[in-house]
Amino acid sequence: MEKFIVNGQRKISGKISAQGSKNGALPILSACVLTNSKVVLHNCPRLSDVYAAIKILEKLGCKALWQEDTLIVDSSGVNNYSIPDDLMREMRSSIVFLGALIGRMGLAEFSAPGGCEIGLRPIDLHVKVMEALGVNIANDNGRITASVKDGLKSCNFVFQFPSVGATENAILAACVSKGTTVLENCAREPEISDLADFLNSCGARIKGAGEGTIVIEGVEGLHGTEYSIIPDRIVASTLLSAATITGGEIEITNIVPSHMRPIIPVFLEMGCKVSVGESWISLKSKDVLNRLKHIVTMPYPGFPTDAQAPIMAVTTIANGTSLFTENIFECRFKHVPELIRFGANIKVEGRMAVVEGVNRLHPATVSAPDLRGGAALIIAALAADGTSEITGITHIDRGYEKIESVLTSIGADVRRK
Ligand code: UD1
Image (cartoon, rainbow, N blue to C red; front, side, top):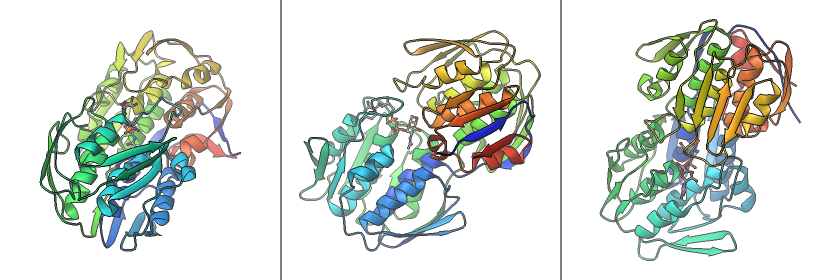
């Protein structure tokens, strides 16, 4: 089992380019199933979640080929509609293949993603919108079959909650349905717009992605395209957190500044100086960080749940008490007991966490509980006065491309062992 060895208290300083977005890439990889020819995807991150999505594509009959950070997917040979249990388990967000498979094959077979590290992750919203599009869903002991008889129909549908994955599945299926679909109370995350932009470049007709109401005029089929995946705003937020906790300075290039809007005020509140250009963001930290009054995770454009853990790690050494409310997932404080091993003072009460800033963190041996929780442990280890060990790093590899090399290239000392 690999682990990270982190020698702390080295200041981050330097310039780095953000990787392509994991949450942008995954639905787009699924969308490739809807096309009948080659898709060329630039800025595709090399992550274990992306490799898991490629395994699913290959299982469905697609061919995938890497050329550096470009992935070429040929979906002309799709001949299977069933995703085996082991592949579903490897990546729980594989539920987003449902919309694409039903659109391409009229059939999809997969297993329910089930509970995971950060919460229950039910799929009721996915099922409801699929049924509105004319899909029959049958559940046989957790193995789910989705089928459509006379083609997908259009619908008017209001999401009870703006689920990212359910909005993506709805877009995927509706873009090849008959007629015009109107989806309301949609998720507005940048990754939704990325998916719609990709699909539109393949011949789909989707308007309003990134807003609450999305209007989709169904088309008969989609063609191939060449497309560049958006930069990863969560990875960028993590790198800003790393610079902040070490009292360092960073410039991150290849970002979309508007995607960073929900997170910038947090760094300003901690007392950092932040500048933003056309496609870059820079941050200069300070010696003693201010506490954060109250961070409340919300759907975009609110503060992202995926940045909660890394930012909490930073507040462990801020001056005063910071409060966090986690509104999106039920069990997204699993990093807390691990942060406490570094000497952090954190109390959890239901969906709230209270962080009393301490003067210093000491080194610790910890285990990554989930993807972003794992990133939080790296952030804490960067500030600790000694050598820390982080195990369970397969979680971190799901979403961060060579995080040890990235951080070491800007002054940190992180090794994979
Ligand atoms: C996506 C992101 C994840 C991010 C999350 C919220 C990907 C691959 N993952 O996950 O990184 O943390 O958005 O920004 O893009 N829910 C239901 N029923 C459903 C679907 C969701 O109750 O049918 C609930 C979930 O349990 C959760 C909340 O809605 O509590 C948000 O989930 P959702 O927006 O669907 O997140 P994901 O698409 O799973």
